[in-house]
Length: 217
Image (cartoon, rainbow, N blue to C red; front, side, top):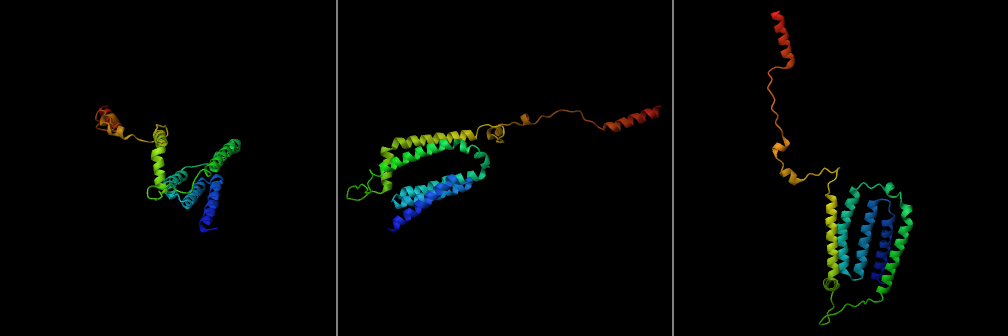
């Protein structure tokens, strides 16, 4: 067994361990951390399989942006584990059925897919083999151009929907519209009421009045 095979088994073992911990971890923060570990090990497997572009993309995009965002969101949310796990056993049979169906589909795809793949890269003029990054770029922007465009439109719609749901008017929200603040006029906020001026207080005036009446009597 060479060193590449040894690293493959090492990365695969850690990947399986981290994947199981993602599902079984009691703390959501620990689950996200295990998911980051799983992505890092998957990137190592991609590098061993000579798919450098996919491995680096997995590290830069998921570990560098998406998973860090997930970690901050989970840490800021007040997740109540007891309330979330109340209906666990009720939905467990359906979850097992769906999980088994997905596992069977993945097994079928991997079993059939590896038989039809070739380890050699196609060559161009002069016998120079093209890199996997070049081949992936050709496939994405030629044969799979329309699916890529459809996925981009779906992500754009999802982003707009998330922004619309976040910025909707709610009763418990204290958000202030800057446009309304700019168009506010002073006469709409401040009302000046004219009142007659008074020289002395009411008690002092009453005392003087009684004194004057006593003197006159």
